[in-house]
Image (tube, rainbow, N blue to C red; front, side):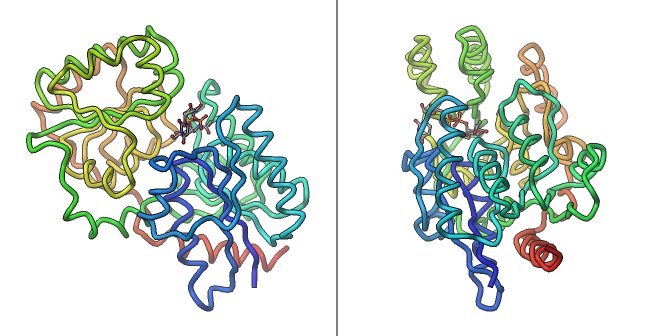
Length: 361
Ligand code: UD1
């Protein structure tokens, strides 16, 4: 049996580890998987409820590192990963995505010569001001097996000189979770009976300065003049809205529906019913592409270009967001297509790729 530690820490990780855990838990899989939760996210709505919705067991190991600066959080995860690996002696660790937990765990394990598989490898925004871009570059540079969600990711890795044998194109594992929950959403009510947009904004660049967040609030108010706007608030966003005295105005706007972070199934049900989404998230660009919902991404670049070339995503800026929304309502949504291997079967391809690679080491 191949003993694996499967690391997750922040909200977007949970739907990426779930399909791998389900596959590895099947009898005869050849794996013994253990879930490690770093505790980067800890509120029930950012973490525990995802385990319930994704039918995951409680984590086998919890680090409870909590919030902190990038260095403090990453370092705490490294120290705890080192201790755990020395005790459990896994054959492999698996890290997913691009959060601080991804890099911290990969860095500690690789120095103990434990093979690291990185799921969602090879994505590049080419914007080094994003902490996630640094996490992606550094994790890919030290991982043994790079499991990619799309062909552009393979090309990025080839261009960086990664040997072909260390890369496997497995598809988008997050879509496995989406495919699994889609039939379970019937009884989840939409946040409003009228047509609505969803907004999700949480990137430090957008919410940490009063100027940026003020501009975003003004744009959301403008959108809400023509359509209901559902705005689930990330804790970071809520804290900034309070700090900059921007919250009350949004609360008093009857066309804006403020909520806390939503559990996975509820959020997917809401996405499915939305006329469009305005976001700065990474994963939501992919989920909307799969669901065929128009997505306006308020960022200068994306590490997920396939959502633009094939899917329903487009990049927008402060000065053209309203214009792009008007275009959308005149022209109707783009007929996107679902990218290659976003088919709900990435989990099984991931475990097959690890088995194959394990045989060589
Ligand atoms: C992290 C990821 C980001 C991902 C996002 C999804 C990194 C560098 N960033 O950003 O890529 O898109 O998760 O949410 O890893 N907080 C709570 N409760 C929680 C967790 C956080 O209140 O359960 C608050 C704390 O005030 C904390 C702040 O949110 O300081 C930010 O949390 P943190 O994990 O540092 O980064 P995110 O912005 O969530």
